[in-house]
Amino acid sequence: MPRGGGLMAPGARLRFLLAVWTLAVLARCSAGEAGDGGWQRRGPGAPAALAEEQRCAVERRADLSYSEFVQHYAFSRPVILQGLTDNSRFRALCSRERLLDSFGDNVVRLSTANTYSYRKVDLPFQEYVEHLLYPQDPTSLGNDTLYFFGDNNFSEWASLFQHYSPPPFSLLGTTTAYSFGIAGAGSGVPFHWHGPGFSEVIYGRKRWFLYPPEKTPEFHPNKTTLAWLQDVYPTLTSSARPLECTVQAGEVLYFPDRWWHATLNLDTSVFISTFLS
Image (cartoon, rainbow, N blue to C red):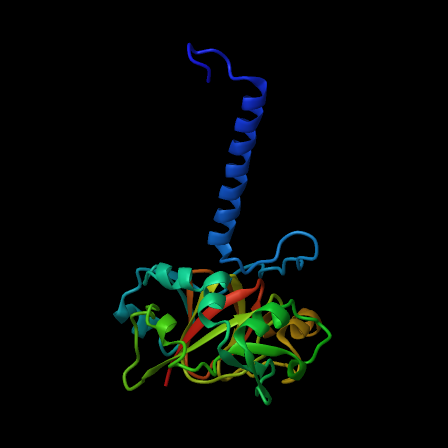
């Protein structure tokens, strides 16, 4: 502004407006980076969004006490936990940029995305993120789909895991073990079962399909969850359909012992499970 309170010259005004617009664009970009950690693809070529279920059939609980957890859920049914821990620091460390900077050269072990995970492949983490973290092809079989989950080298990833706060619930006689994963939209693991555990979404969304131990689901162990959702799910009667719900970033799903479950990542997702064994 000229001295004396005169109007800004046209050229200076244009430069000022351009600077304000640039700062606004940068702020919006930064907000997007903070919201999804840089994991979501945008613009031309980005994958179409996968749908959540019409109605979540798994109860959500905030401020759940340990006694309520044991009495109502630990041995009988799944539950989604909200607000029990603050993992904002861990979440920040799991952004795409930070993980590549810290672990890009680390060799990770990938598993095939079928029920029994027959095949393992080792390659640098950066190569997985930049070349294999793409949306699932619905026609691909599970043994053709590589998936980063579990098989973590705990000594190499300890600097990250030390910042994670697991749910504050445990079961008598069990110990905990972490499995950390990152997977593309449409990927997931078909139906399987094991011991109880918790699964937290750090970035993205993960849709879960669950059956109690006595109700074996109809599925092919070498077909992906996406193929099952497209081919088998629509043929199921309402009584034959699983419990299902989409777990959002910051939420934790608890699944009891021996419950069948399949997962489907609706976005590129970062997640960590705490297994009780």
